[in-house]
Length: 136
Image (cartoon, rainbow, N blue to C red; front, side):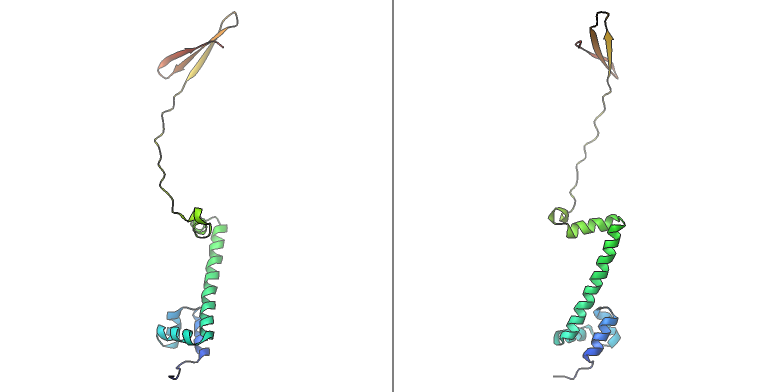
């Protein structure tokens, strides 16, 4: 087995300083990314530190997402629903067919009351008289 250039403690310390970012850890130690990966494969302490640092970043990101949801930010609400809301929220939105508005028909009804108490109704629209309605 080849002699290790860095102690496990040095690699762990560099991982903690760089918050588990492999490229930054390698830069701090002056080695390649592959070296960090090899240390993680051979040494459980390095592997555990790497996983712990990455989980901490995820926790920080989840906290920021939670705060954005609390502020009512639409992007955060949609992301949360699509990611954690189950299958009914996971689908991408479907195109909605919108029908053009139908013309509105305005009608007026005039009631004519006769002296004997009977009445007749007539409907009038925008073009004039439309029809008579039987007395009620």
